[in-house]
Length: 141
Image (cartoon, rainbow, N blue to C red; front, side):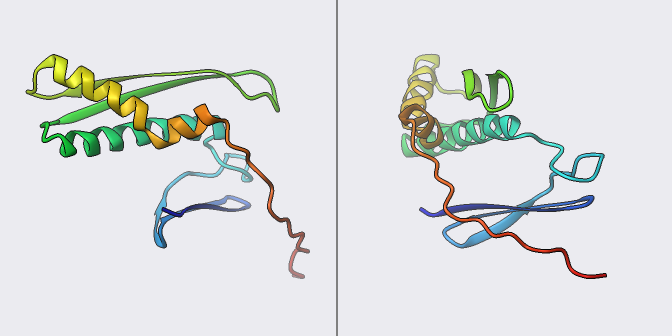
């Protein structure tokens, strides 16, 4: 699976495009009130990535086990220090609406925690590398 995220930011414009295996879509994230940058910060989006991954994977794993799940709420809390410091602590909780027995849902939640890809990526400490840069001059007016 190949995933791509792209941000295009100009004064008072912030466009986000996402794609998985070449199938793209956009999400709406406003620019900062001052005009440059995103109203959402990277820590918030990292927490959103974890919450989204766990939610989607929970439905996937439930379907694979023929467990009926009618709703999922996931909350992620991340604690960051100063500029340039990595997160100090990330924790999350989940609530599931289901008519399945509680022990079945608890096992499903624990199993999903073990197989959630974004969670396992962070737990594995994968290297993030800057692959290329390009410097452009603004267009003449």
